Image (cartoon, rainbow, N blue to C red; front, side):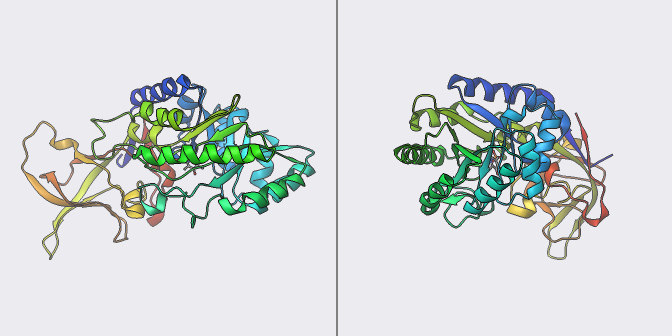
Amino acid sequence: MTPYYNYDISLLRRTLDACLNEAYRYGYQVHYALKANVEPVILHEISSRGFGADCVSGWEVQAAVENGFAPAKVVFAGVGKSDDEINYALEQDIFAFNCESLQELEVINELARLKDKVATIALRINPDVNPDTHRYIATGQKESKFGISYTEVNEALDKLQALSNLRVAGIHFHIGSQILDMSSFAELAHRAGEISDWFFERGVAIEHLNMGGGLGVDYLEPEKNPIPDFAAYFKVFDDNLRLRPSQKVHFELGRSLVAQCCELRTKVLITKRTGGGANFIIVDAGMTELIRPALYQAHHKIVNLSAEGECRPAERYYIGGPICESSDIFARDIEFPHTERGDILAIKSVGAYGSTMASNYNMRPLAKAVF
Ligand SMILES: *Cc1c(COP(=O)(O)O)cnc(C)c1O
């Protein structure tokens, strides 16, 4: 029955509770970023605790609503939203559209006008903060496709005066993902305060500041650090974000809530040595179940469950999947216990951006989840 995603619901619950405890300390509202994982079991665990939802497509808005998230706590971001997706979200009366371009303001205004509604929006502003993360998952620099740039904010305000079916309630940021250096978040908090002041000076009362997501997890030692340091994360914002009375702070966490609660179990199909002398383990999971290593050179810890409790000698191995792509490799030249055909391996920390990025390339069926 391999490969399959093996979930630890107890760890998920402890992680969610840790996050909520720290967020409540400051009155912060956390929206779960659905794109990290959309297993209904997982969504119910999260929605039943009162988290909001952060969606990046109309289908995610629908999944959120159908799995217990209150529409009044749903935000909808995305650099290209289709009319159908916008219309669906308008009908649900979601909390806010996070708008990423000047043209999008006109589109949502027009669709809201046709429904005789006023859409609540937040402007996603690109703060030009450069986090220390892989360039494919950084989103807040000035050449990024996401958000409205600093230089366009004036124009956005002028435009908004004429758009009577929009109400600007907030400003929104998201600088990237898998960020462990808290100084990037401190910088973001400072910029957000400045930008909020700028709006106030122009007569626009910003009600909520949405700091996005991005808190990283420990992919190197997941067993040692199963729960991210939410205390340090929220404290950085409390220390660095100057708020006006009545302003609320929102977050959109994905990875940090769900990454560690799942491992991908996979069986060894073949072991072989290449002409060049590389020792290969080929397993029955591939980039179709976990594309992060192939897509952004991500590291995932791998353990040989069959070798646990035995003293097998350590060797050096490459571990790859069966997919017909050279990039379908999970680990290169790592030290790993002697491994044989039929052994079961666990690829750790796959709860975020694992199953949601799965495909059926090579006509493979989607892998099952076990809870
Ligand atoms: C992906 C995304 C998130 C979640 O990011 P994580 O790094 O998983 O916390 C939050 N907000 C937006 C707009 C996103 O695109």
